[in-house]
Image 1 (cartoon, helix red, strand yellow):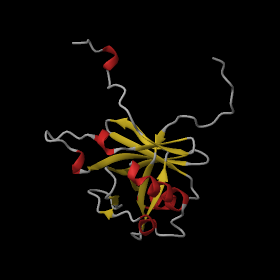
Image 2 (cartoon, rainbow, N blue to C red):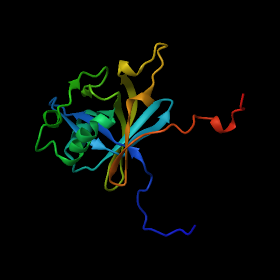
Image 3 (cartoon, helix red, strand yellow):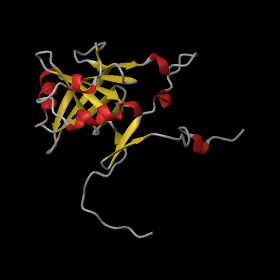
Image 4 (cartoon, one colour):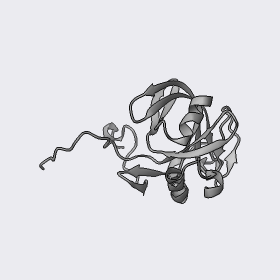
Length: 188
């Protein structure tokens, strides 16, 4: 198969379609959709979000040093898109989307009640990278919806119907193809 050379760009797809909740020192909060977010370390647990400095939410993260990564689902795809194509300068995104703010465990930023997982983060470092600033953060708490726990207390995120973003489109995650280490397990 032949390959076609392309100009350098970001082609690591799919990425999460997450809604990031933020709040300023004045207590006002906002929502912003971010695909450039994810895990960066496991011990200590750390995550990141990269946001353009001109975005309304950027200064709020700088002021408070806190944000929440809210994982989104198929049923929240419209709300996810709305939070990415509207500005908190112009509209209250909580009212626009009908999403429900809930008090976080640790940070002073609301979590989104309707999201199956809310990852509370406290910024440890800011990397000014060019078009975006990358907020590196320690995960200080995780909130998970009780409906995704089984009778043994095991969390089943696969039941949440999460979505991803790829090249300008939202996709539902689908069929499980294997589990970690399945390629080397001995068959019974």
